[in-house]
Length: 137
Image (cartoon, rainbow, N blue to C red; front, side, top):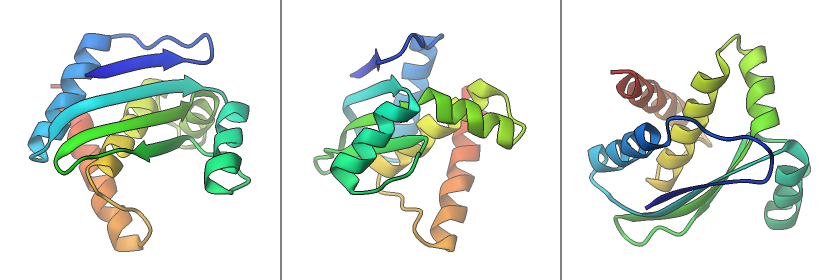
């Protein structure tokens, strides 16, 4: 099941379409959906999480907590709407495209994809592009 929560006044549109898209990503990667929570927040909220749980002191667009059990995907995904807006401007991208990219990125992390090494980042970004295109079909 996919749930949406907001610690800001942000509301995601097309909830059903996004749920179907996320399920599609998971199925195409030969996994099964458990519970996935998307929590939309601001920079300060996510910075506190970054400090408290990861001992990091910088802003980020997304933090994913992985509770995956074998091929059943469970996780909490915290997304800073402020950071997504900032990055969309920085990369000259539409806000919602950047948001969906971050959502796909987080789901791919839950599916086991990494982005520590350059080669891993290339694979992850190619997957993001692939799944973003599926959203718009």
